[in-house]
Amino acid sequence: MEHEQKSGAGLLRLLRLLWLLPQSWAVLEASTPVLWDGPQNHTFRHTLFCQDGIPNIGLSETYDEDELFSFDFSQNTRVPRLPDFAEWAQEQGDASAIKFDKDFCETLMREVSPQLEGQIPVSRGLPAAEVFTLKPLEFGKPNTLVCFISNLFPPKLTVTWQLHSAPVEGASPTSISAVDGLSFQAFSYLNFTPEPFDLYSCTVTHEIDRYTAIAYWVPQNALPSDLLENALCGVAFGLGVLGIVLGIVFFICSQKPCSGD
Image (cartoon, rainbow, N blue to C red; front, side):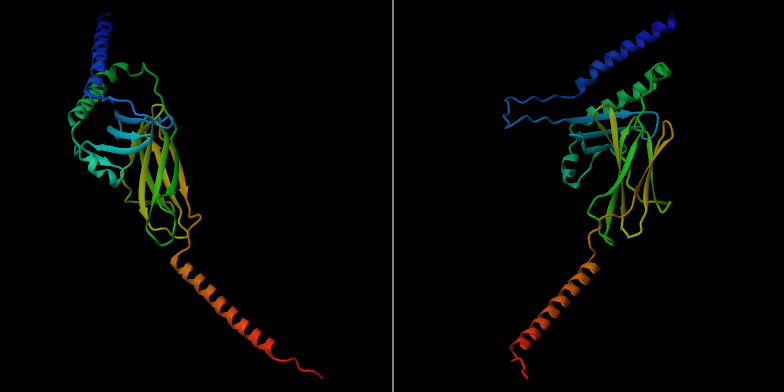
């Protein structure tokens, strides 16, 4: 009975903290309505998560499920997904609110999670992966492979790259962001220079259940290289010159009178 009272008191304190959490964010409302030509529905999502795993804490900000920023807690700064957002990432006006959310999340992990372990079903998603190039494929020109992971929950994962089954180093840190349906997506980037017989693979391991998803990439629909373009131009030029010469010969022959018996 005493244990039940303690658990009830702990949950009551948790509810109070949950009520205080929205107070850490200021919600700005437009003073006048904005008229649009048609319905415009957009979603800005600010998601902070913490967990007993890797990564142990994360924060992402997305607009219509396109990631704008992640947060580097070791440096206490935003990390823009695109260089164009670098100036906005310098804004630190909500640093205290982010710290509040981080401390709150870690408090839940430390004090509440052990009490509820085994009592709440664990939701899991089987991650799916696909690999594509960031720019149109051209052999011999630097490019970037993107490994996109969807249906990820919880966001505990490791991503590794291989070339012809051999490990490849140099991939960027995995970027994780929240999407609709209490799920997550992730991106891993690998800079490379494509060659005709490349075989790359992206291996995603879901740490919670050791489920593994593998996506392969081989060159397809490559744009013509500079060498091939020059060769084709040379062939076309040669055929053009040959056509002109043959045309002149036929013209001269047509001007000669036919010999009769």
